[in-house]
Length: 614
Ligand code: ADP
View 1 (cartoon, rainbow, N blue to C red):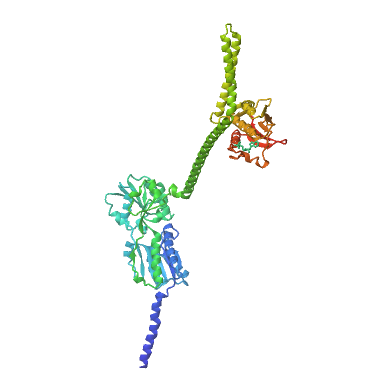
View 2 (view 1 turned 45 degrees about the horizontal axis):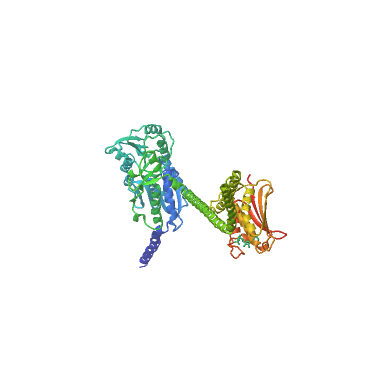
């Protein structure tokens, strides 16, 4: 009984010791991953595998996971001694660093990881990636191993080659010896089986100088399919993407490739394996195991890491259209169009041009409107001036009638006298001649009165020419003389001794003078006597001519001296108040000035200054 109790106690003790420990083996796995690359991790392809892996680990974020990396570099180093040395190195290096999952990149790395596991990482699951289907079948890894299997088919590469060269006749395989190949080893058999309807040239396992020479002289309708070159055959090793750059520099045909990292150094593209995808797949499997899943529950599976991707620049070089590529193809290294490249600059430029165009249109429109307004204003002015002149003429009509009556009366008298003389038996023909010449003179006087009247009433467009201001003034005063005497006004004119040449419209300027003189006559209308008007012309400082009209009237109230020029300002019962405003407009149109003053001895004086013609 005691023994039984002892035994069962031992079993329970063992069970409690082992059972939870078994459970915890998965739960308590150290959160660390050792990545074992079969090649040099700094080569572009393996580096991209690592980038995909690291990004997936960083994105995981449940618990911080340490990632260690080791490159076996089996392309350049090999043999039992090297491998054993490497194993011992790992043993030393990771003595105090427990590993949760080993990730083997490549079939050769997987083989070594399986072999080293009992010694280095007992009980640790292994995740593989970059293992080709045939290698996977050959290795038949045990249950603690899982991973993503990749397949690259020569037939896909040929499909891409046909897309690149539609009338394809020859496929040229370029690469290292088949036994050195990692992913393309199985293409050896596929190539040996032949490519239906196509000739095949194999430049496989040749030293680099041979390869470069041969690819420079390939037949028409051929495409190179590049697998990977690792050395120049003289002990110099390089990543296969670098070797591709040498080949591409010399090749006279496009190069179809099967790895994403072969696009940039000169591959035109094809169904390429994307290394970051396989890195990410391995990381996800490793993380699930670290999170507690058993590797047996994550069986190895094929992964979809092959995509049709093409290099736009190579497509341009070999004249390959986008339409001929396999469906769903991605295009890389496309040069941005002008608009894509300079989008914002182009938009800014277009906006600036638009604004400028609008501004120009606006300015042109404004100029047009201003011109129109100017023409309208001038028309209105000449219309107003015309009606103002008509009004003045109306005022002056009585004196005009009088002025005409005089010559007409003397013509009649002279004609009657001539008749009488001619009726006598001995007519004095000399006297008749004198009478006739008087008749002619009177007739000329009458027609002169009519001419002046007509010119005053003529509605002519504003027109400047060089005139003598003295003469203009004289004509206006002659015209006003009769009116002045009818209104009992003494009128005098003092012209300057020298001629006053100005650019002006004589009709318009005479109208100004008439307005000023008639205004003076009006102002003096209520004075019983002493109505006097004096007109003057003189030179002012050599640059302008000044006309002054003085009267002996009451003058202008000082606070109205400016106001009187405003349109419709009048103090007269029948006044319109436009005479002075028109006068000012006419003077301004002559680039002159007009102003009024009161004389110290009484009466108003109006000055009108005009620039002298050069
Ligand atoms: P209107 O003669 O129809 O009144 P004007 O524009 O010719 O219009 O004159 C405006 C006003 O200026 C006159 O009503 C008058 O009050 C004043 N004025 C013009 N000339 C004289 C002057 N020589 N003396 C006094 N006042 C004057």
